[in-house]
Length: 500
Image (cartoon, rainbow, N blue to C red; front, side):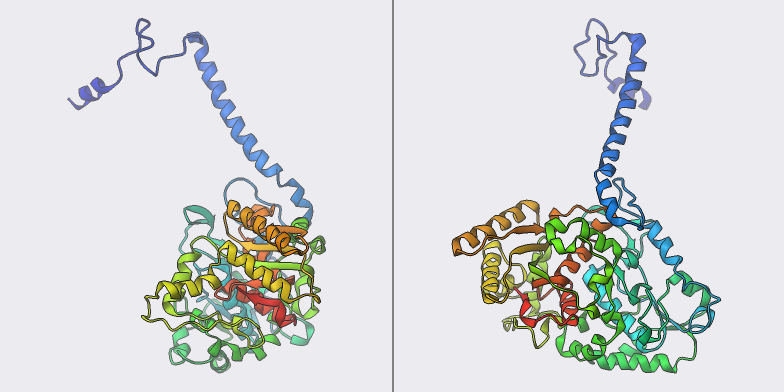
């Protein structure tokens, strides 16, 4: 009965007499004997079209290859990159030889932070891993550098964000250079280079596992220096040459610490002198993106290499460039939460020498800020175009005549149409005020990047802001906070690092 009902529900057979009664009738102009070859050609044509689209996608990036030089070739295609070659390059670093003499090889002393944060933005991850590496250096243990991981639970290469596929993990060397990512320390530091987890597992098959809460549990309100010293003491007392901080046991330098200047800033004298920071740099993948887009950002970037971003070398600022950090999208909800919590700027964004301060208004009801209180946060956290233009005008004028700003680059996730309106408004305001029009107005959305660079574009933006003559950032953002750290380490004039 079921089969009969299914058959009865199907369309009636098409006949010559009723050839127009069904939308599925065969095409009368194709003789029956040619129909199979015809449809085969259609299928082949569709395959060829898809191949051509994919080829066009890849060939459109061919002119970017010259900037990559000896780096892995982009994977291309429409899937997110998997970074296999980058992972292989890390494993082939010369320090990954178990027969090397002490303090390297199988006799070395190591620490792996398996509790490193994941599932959070690059700004959060970067600040934590730099402080972890600083701890490892002071404790005289080799740092084990991890991937930047978005999804630690992903079984394959990909995860998703806002419904779109993204890499589940990115090798650290595709983001950073310097001692934190396996490069040699300066000779004055007398420390072995960092290694990857695979090598750690090889030479440390049975490490001592330390739960983060064993130390941090009793230091919930302690300063960063107090926490740092407690861990140095613990590691010095641990005889085992191999230590692993237990996964899922919380972070040593957690978000609450990094967001509280009263607890965080006392670590600065130690951190500023650490080779982890003084010899920090960006990956050659990132500097290649800057070189390829120098015409959009600043012509001085046309030959960029990682050595041009090492704080201790005091790189020259990008003359006349004003970098703006403008968050959009779901950040509006984050800003509302900040108002509800009566939050302050991030810890490193409250260096005493910085000219722009933010004193949070007393929220009448914690967790439920009023409309007026939300508005007080919005102008600093999620400014609208009119407010952005006004602030840019103010900062530009305040630095004259010593500093003449001629170019703008916007670090942003804003929609292209909104950014076009912003560009137009900035230029119109310059004309209205009778000052020089901007020579160039570029944004993150204007850059041409390989797939690998596009999925690390936050680092590209941060590198621009690090070198910009003037930076106008978001005080509530960890991305801005990292930029502030790098600019401060370079000794840039406080007056040239500003906030909304």
